[in-house]
Image (cartoon, rainbow, N blue to C red; front, side):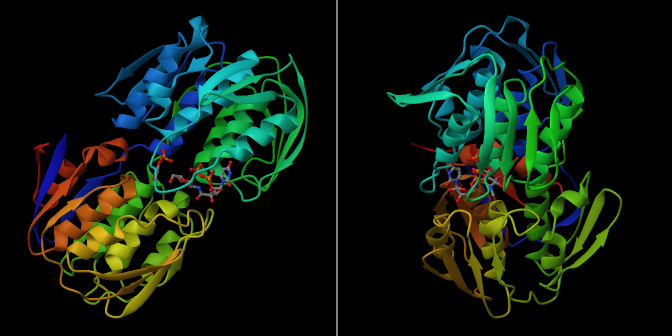
Length: 423
Ligand SMILES: CC(=O)N[C@H]1[C@@H](OP(=O)(O)OP(=O)(O)OC[C@H]2O[C@@H](n3ccc(=O)[nH]c3=O)[C@H](O)[C@@H]2O)O[C@H](CO)[C@@H](O)[C@@H]1O
Ligand SMILES: C=C(OP(=O)(O)O)C(=O)O
């Protein structure tokens, strides 16, 4: 197991390239197995979640090749015959649960383990399962597995997502495009990852009405063909580095390869901190403010503030001149980073789904432990402005979702070393 040793504080100056998005790539990979010819996806990041999902897909007999240097993934489902996603792999990442929709949609049968992923508390999948039932599938749970089957064509129907769910929208779209006569998803997610998936399925031949809106109507087609897809830029990595840049008053960082449109309201919220943003076609320059203004945020569905940037924002607010609150309405208990950032000297207090942060506390290096992906990166952000040495333990969570994190940050002035962690 690896850990990071971080020496701080360090201002960040220079240019950071943004990688392809993990959360956009994974549903596209699941969609590829619906095609009756190979699909090629470019701009795919080298991340542990991508390798794990490659292996999940391979178990089915699908041929997967990943050219890591070029970021090109080719998925050829011609020999797909084994309709199962086993616990040993699915437990490692939540997105492998998309295999349920994809296998059921393509073959009318699937056996998929209930999911794992970042475990900060309950992450139910009832909407995925009930939506498929509404479509006409038989679903039962047996020994930790979901076992599903469906007739050649399911009747379909209408299913309202309450609350709106990214994962359930993706799974229901995957299950229906080849197999439901007419299926309507109300209150569908319209996060950029979902919109990209729907657009690419339409390019493959799917019939999806309402792409990019809250109501999707899907009418099954008989076949889909493989296509060439360019994966989106990672909007959460972009937001994370914007926050990193704002945390030290002498930082000035340009992010390259950004998809500004995918950031929703985040840039406008970000500017309330006093940080200056200069936006180009696919670049964002972040000039840190002299004094960071306390700025309250509440997570919402897109285009609102993303839950995946909640921990990073709270960590930034430890350096603001005053008190702020950060509320998570998507996942109520995504605050496991708080005791760890507190170990570095922050003053944070969690009540229900809200953390109150008393700002401008000097941080001082210590050993801290990563508990999930976005929690882990928050500890790196804190470590980069803490005085002295911070050891961030168990960084395997980070490797699930941040490509070349230490190299990218060291190239702009950070001092982060990856080393083996003694057990
Ligand atoms: C809307 C939202 O911001 N979704 C985020 C969520 O996606 P993820 O797909 O994990 O979660 P969902 O979007 O499905 O969850 C949204 C809400 O719906 C609830 N729910 C979901 C499914 C279900 O079957 N039953 C149910 O009650 C969840 O508990 C949650 O409160 O975490 C991902 C990883 O951090 C993020 O990338 C997504 O942007
Ligand atoms: C937690 C995340 O991923 P997952 O939903 O795959 O656990 C994330 O991307 O922040």
